[in-house]
Each structure stands twice: as structure tokens, then as C-alpha cells.
Image (cartoon, rainbow, N blue to C red; front, side, top):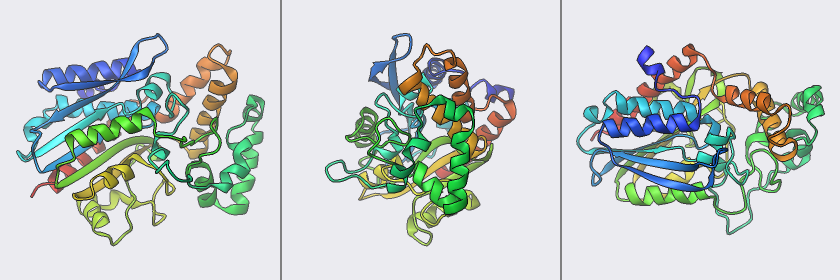
Amino acid sequence: MTRALAYFSNDYRSARGKFLVACKTARLKVESLENPHADRGGEPLYTDVAVLGPENTSTALVLTSGTHGVEGFCGSAIQTGLIMEGLAGRMPPDLRIVMVHAVNPYGFAHLRRVNEDNIDLNRNFIEHDGPPPANPAYDELSDIIAPTSYWRLATGAILAQLLIHRMVHGTAKLQAAITGGQYSHAEGLFYGGRAPAWSNKTFRRIVRRHIAGAERAALLDIHTGLGPHGQGEVISSDIPGSPAHARAVNWWGERVKSSKAGESVSAELSGTLKSAFCEMLTRAEVTAGTLEFGTFQAIQVLHAMQAENWLHHHGGPGHRRATRIKAAMRHAFYPDSDSWKTKVWEQGCEVVEQAMQGLRP
């Protein structure tokens, strides 16, 4: 496993470099799509796309990393490692795999879950022509979820208020209120935006170019932050008993949990990348899942997000707590331990192999 640990990186620039080296070693052509914003040093940021296998196959598997920027370390390592471990040589001849590295390169580079406009991309894939989904519970709790005072976070006052709300309304309702997505507080958490973000439009362009003609397609969108430490869950948005959910269970077994049925570590979400993928491929048989790896307790992860959001909007990069807050944010979604990395690498490889088997004729 020492070799596998080398696939993990400590920052976006290193992660991208390793991915590009892996692609070059495997003689894969890479399309690099430049984000309109730069990293902290002024260097350009890219979403990189590599295709394994022929372009004209009837089956396709898409592996995405970094939809939630700072969560990209794990997905990047899995993508890079799979290429370096000879994935192309193990693929069925009628399958193509499209790897989308750093869907949200801005968040990856700046250690934010959100993009350059404070948009949570996994809430942005809605129909923006009509009224957005309502979340009155978030509106009620907005000052607690995204406080403007760091003192309230540091003293634990916010935590106490959230715990009281959970006691009154229950854990599931509190999680849905906080994480389900909201479209009215532009400086808040889980903000879905008022228009399609650059990463939204870029991902759709990638799907149209590489996947549109597939008759059978699958998506694994790799995330971190929810669930027991180092444990992977395939989150399905399909209803148990539906053909898509049955396929997912057949491929990935008990690891599959439906958010619609309330089984998952995630609440049911609006505007996800996964849902957009399914909606774009109406003529194909589509199996889609979010591969979520747990890190720490939900309250610790939320606190890291709250502090980072406060820093970005109120404290500023020069604040004396900035380095500590950014480090805590990175750690919340990317634990710096060999055991965690080993677990997610092994499970990531297994889930991808199972998807490949599932896509066989």
C-alpha cells in the first residue's frame, strides 16, 4: 500500500500534476478546460478530462472528482492511482471511461467546498428558469448556520443552538434544513446559485461530447465528509424497487443506500451533478451513484465549514486565524492519515471494478 499512498497529494497543484503524469504515462490524451479564476498565486486552474478506451463504444463510465473542491484530494488519488495501476488494460473492449479531474478546480485550489461564486455545485444543477426549491427551515436558521460572528462559533454558542433545534425537531429535519440546499442566502452554506455555474456548464459540455451516444452509462461522483471514518457508501437518488436502484444494488451490494428512502448518510438533495447526468441521458440506461467516504463527526465537519465560510466573507485571508481555519477545513474532508487513505483507496478501486463488471453486456 506504500505505492498507493503516493497517489495522494497535499494541494490542488500537486494533485493535478500527478494526474497529468499518470495520463502521460498511460498515453492518454487530456483536454484541459481553464476556469475563469486563478489560484492564490495567480496560476490558472483547470478541469482536466481524460478518456480511456475508444470514443465510439455503447457503454461508458464517468468518474468525477472535486465537485466539492476541497473534497477533491480523495477522488483525485483514486483517479490517478487507477490509471497508474493499469486500469486501461483491464477494461472490456466495448467500454470507455471518462475521468473528470477537479470539476470545481477553484474550490480544490482554495480549500473551499464551493466555487468562485460561493455556489455549492451539487445544488446548482436545477432548472434556473423557474423558481428555485424553497427551504424555509434554512431561512429560519440562516444566522445560526452561517454566522457573521466568529466569536459565536469559537464559544460554542452556535453548537448549543443547533443541538437544541435537533432535540426539538430531530436529526433528519435539521440535516435537511442545513444541507438540502438553499437559493436565497448568497453568503450562506449550501447555496445553489441563481444561474448555472461555470463548472455546471463545463460538465454538461463534457457529457455531451463524450457520453451523449452511449446506450448504457454509469457515473461515480466521489465525495468525502459524511459517514463513519474511512467507510464508503454509494448514495443512490433512486427509489428502492426501481430498475436503476436494483442495478446499483446488483453492482455494489449493501454499500448502496437510497437518500430518497432515508437510508443514506446524506439528506435528499436538489440540483446535484448526479441528477443532471441522468436527465441528460434520457435515452440511455443510466446507473448513477455518489461515492461518499466518511471523515469525522458531522458536527466537526459542519463547524469547519462554518468557520471557513466566515473567514471567506468576513475575516479575510490576512486574518490571524486564517491558516488554522483553512487547515481545519482541509482536515475535515481529507484526514491526513495513512489508514484513512488506504481504506478509501481500496474501496474506491473495488467500487470502480464493480461498475465495470456491471456494465459488461
